[in-house]
Length: 207
Picture (cartoon, one colour):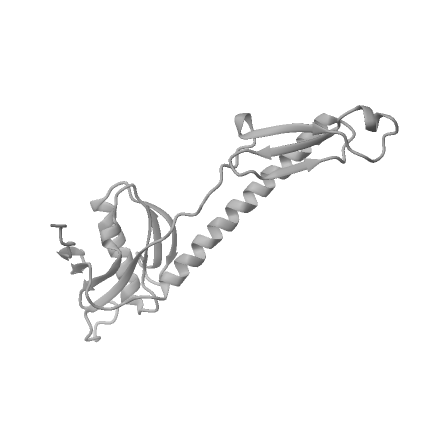
């Protein structure tokens, strides 16, 4: 699954909290892998971190609290800092392979220059990407081989663009979560500069 830890519009201490909580979670769940991040203004801080894990961390979705007197602003009285943890829908990435059993290649007759050979030789090529059903064709080249190469190149470009669009959608979804922090009723509380876990809300077991 993919999750995001975000400081939202909070102050610098919230960005320090994102970094500290991410590091604490990485120690707790070693398979965590950072996908994307926006660094904060001080070392080790982040405005947001998007990461993946094979663990089911759905219970961690919500607000997390860090209780610590600010070392960044020593005169500041506040010591409760909140960050948001959200599950980010995984993008529907398509299989962009255009080789082997992933494609079906068909030839067909096509009009255009070429004299009598146009009606006798099937030089047009249609390539169908079987996982998605996306179809492209090429008729501009004089040989079937060249049309096949051209069609495969076009199909590969279409699949890359499709995946880029899906990744962009994930980023937009992550940004919406970035602005929706609810303070209070935390799912976890960390304390101190070493980010000790002192509270974890457990869902009630089904009776």
